[in-house]
Length: 117
Image (cartoon, rainbow, N blue to C red; front, side):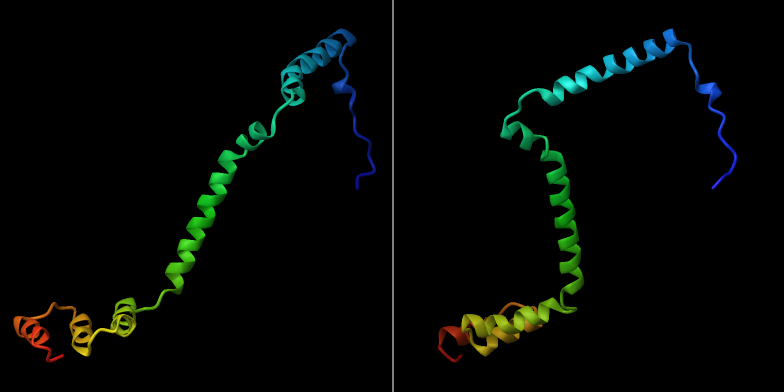
């Protein structure tokens, strides 16, 4: 710390000017005090939190989206299509179509109608 004292003589004001400054500060604070002391219902109080709550929700959604994108598998198509026929109970030829990313040919459709699959 410092051993020398501070010179605060420059802060001295004449009493009339100091009183006027105090009254200006009090007059400026009156609307704020009146607004804070006015009775408010719980809905009005919650309405004041709408913007911060929406901002927090957006932040959570953005961070969650980033986490999901970072954690997704590298080849989601192969994983999803490999399990789809098993889950739906489809024949193996349908799995081949899905893995090859193509639709059935005319021969495949005729074979399906004749019960070859």
